[in-house]
Length: 177
Length: 399
Image (cartoon, rainbow over all chains, first blue to last red; front, side, top):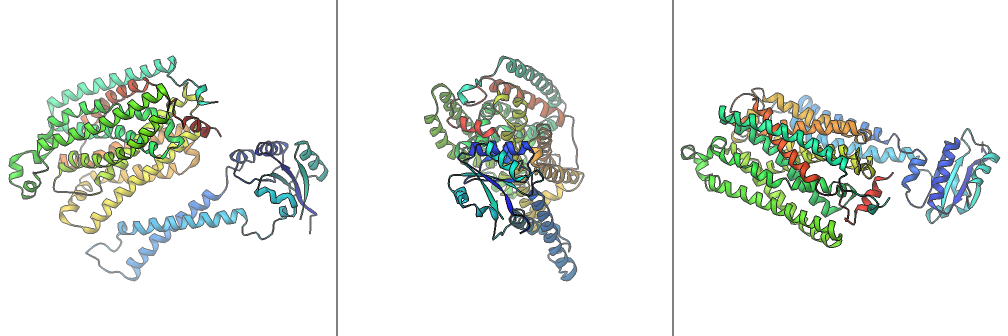
């Protein structure tokens, strides 16, 4: 209980007003904000500058590790540990390695996509303060929420509350930690 | 911004620009064909070699566009609605390509050993294959392929014109119904076409995936061509008002997919034959992996697969018009190298060689083809204005 609040949350009735509010908050200089909506809103990604994340790099790294693992697995088995002459082919018969190397690339890339996604989202997360706002249950029905977190350097309880109120939300509530 | 709000007919500025491109293409094509005619007198064998592979390359672009068009009628999607008109224009070049096939018909004795009775008489295998591999049947099959392709292009274009005149639903239903059988015909005709025109150069060798290798190649060539064209158009009115980065990004994804499919088929064929290591199969690869041809094979692995694959993985590159055009043009160049590597070694029967005609032929055939394509392109509005999906396709482009 270091901080009394997690942040301030504004509730909106339409996706457009949420997008406008998110845009305004970005412009004002807030960076630690998150939006909640019952369905995906493409414009929100732009408004919150969410286009870039580390997931592609994680997947690429996973794919490369998978390729190297797959290739080396076969190389060490057929060249080092159990060298067997098959049909007079060289021990290091790379064409026959490609299929499994390819499969391992896909497997590792796919797994790192799933695990990377979970890690970047901070999941599993058994507790999140936003659920302390009673009306937040509506985020999975028909309401749209914007939360400015207290960890934002610009965050000031009264000023931020004022700012949010000026965006004409239905309600501004405090998110307890 | 609604679909009805934009006039997609070719503006007068664009028309004069397209005409300038057309004149340049026609001049290049005319000069190329004249030089090629000179080459035909000097060295007929070389002329037919160069002509065959160049012709197959450009036919691949037209047929690939036909396949994309039919895929889009089956699946829908914004990517397909915006490329409908260039695809239709490319389909309308098929009658020209049928006419350009005539030199190959005259070249049968110089291209295909099975057309000589004395060679067939001396070869048990060719005697057995003679029922299929003989000149009249070869020509009949070519006629069937062209008849089918021209029939499909005629129906699709007629319905598309009707849609422009009277609105969409009925035309869309008809095109959707024809697209399925059309794709089946495309698959079979391309398979038999490459068996006839390419594979039978060496009638002792066979590969069941050969047709699919060319289908993937056609998809790749045509998508690279379409991307280049769409990016050129996207800077100019009327397309600059509707065609966006997001549409081009979608086409870039298809380019990546085709690069992978091509590599998948190419490697599948190689792996099976390499594993079997049987004399009558492996010789085809041994010929293509020695005598200088191996450098071309290496270039194919690196520049036809690895490099475009690695580059096209990037989202930023697919959304950068300059870089994506560069990759698309590079892919088109590598498509030519690939077809040359598949066609030429069996005709040259020796180590790697390139003639001056191998540079003149693609310019000659390509120039004439491109000029004719541009002539077809400017005839109709650049977007299917009455397509019920156009509105959605344009909305998709906005971010």
